[in-house]
Amino acid sequence: MWNWKNLQTLVPPPGAEVDFAACLDAFPQLELARTTPQDPVYHAEGDVWTHTQMVVRALLEDAHYAQLTVQERETVFFAALLHDVAKCSTTVVGDDGRISQPGHSRKGAVDARIALWEAGAPVHQREAICRLIAVHQVPFFAFAESRRGHSPEFIVRELSWQVDVHLLCMLARADIVGRVCPDVEGVLVNIDLVREMAEEEGCLRTPRAFASAETAVRYFRGAQLHPDYALHAEPGSEVVLMCGLPASGKNTWVATHCAGWPVVSFDDARAELGLRHGQNDGAVAHRAIDKAKGLLREKRRFVWNATHLSRQMRGKSLDLCLDYGATVRLVHLEASRAELLARNGKRDTTLTNAALLGMLHKWEVPVPTEAHALEMLVHQD
Image 1 (cartoon, rainbow, N blue to C red):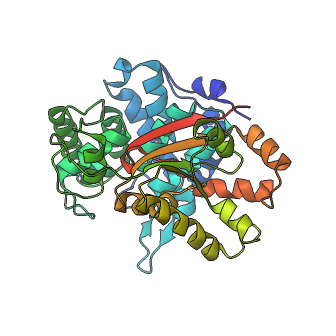
Image 2: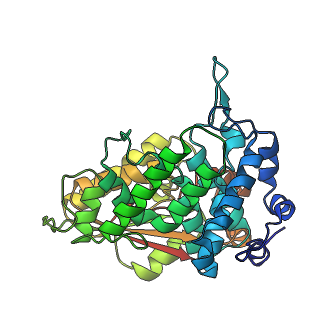
């Protein structure tokens, strides 16, 4: 079993070679890349592992690589190594024989998160890696017609709140250079345009500045605003929205940091209704949401204590809070695998450790664009 300290030895200093055999040993899921096919139009080089090795080599040949700090090199190296880790599980062959891997970036971020969490990678660096994987192809198309209807300016500003755009452009460049496909030069131009726009916006290495947190939240949710002009809104509730796997320490954190605050909890609602985990989730959600609505109408502060594991799950709670004008702080808690399973085994719960580990495949850690503030904490006893 590889740990983070061992993994760090895989990252070559400038001018050194990559030990790809060790990389395969460290991340067994990459073995499946050897036999995962790709569309020959966009990947005439062949299978996913061939492409991955080409991408990593292209990254190391980038002149910017030697200028990075050790931590930055680790971050972009692992993002390149794992950027297509989920292609093996997302491959679809159409009726016309064309191969695609829909959603591989988003699922790849989850797969990488699990592997790096199990290895004990530092949470902030792990998430920097996973966020790069999640958006690694966005620079290819930022100056094309957006599927979401967003302008290039919006896309670059949003990216800057999620990733280091400089590292993202390095990764995207390596991804397109490390393949055999048409119009490589056209894609490289798009990547350069993303870099230039980020430089103009002052957000190549840091998040784009906004006049206020409220302005940023509303802008990223689609409001027609300019980042430099503050949006003034009537204050609503102050809400702390908890996120994290069961047994990650959410209850302890709430008791310590929000003592006396009203708490909205699906677990409490389930207990009040006398239901086991997984029973009649609709009734449980209805009861919890009714309580939240009452607190939001009264503009009272409260904690929403739930797993909120995926962005979709969080989105429902966030939508409700923001519709009522609340200020929302996301608090993401986690623990190591050993601590998590040990705690869960001691809890009075119907959730088994096997079921808890199964939840990892829905684990999408929040990004800063989702709420007014984000804290990512590792809870230790």
